[in-house]
Length: 219
Image (tube, rainbow, N blue to C red):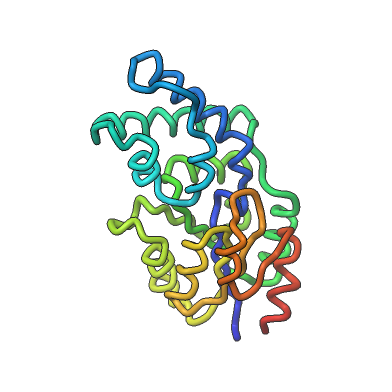
């Protein structure tokens, strides 16, 4: 199998979203409390449980009784707070991400990012951590009307005529996207991963540096 194309998820795979998630979500829900639109604690654990789905679906789950206009307003508010935290250096890449991407690039891999994150959010992470040194192109779920990760990966496969390759991610949507496009799936046992979802991946890693070993085994 020619695996010289590799597609990474961003949140919970390359970027430690959990380091900024609680700050941004707390700030967002504090604003909602002040406006009388929310009572009680910030639903951080509920967010973590659905981490990986597109943001419109997040707000449907967290704010089921609010109007679509309020959800859209919250979406933008949350995005702004995430961006502030990223630029302030409160986030981080996972250990060995830079080293792994560098090795993949040196060995001739085409590296892509396919994420349920929004374009501005993804571009900010890429800019702050200089991931454009390694990544050919970043694809956001904003580009896909269906909000389906499999369709997003299909865009990459089609644009770059990928016959075989690898999808690396931490959630079931990444694994399903790989299978739907007949690609090899590597599950990441990181912050937001669930064992029952990882069980469906071709292989599972506990550290990003293990990607190279698993790729060698798959050849």
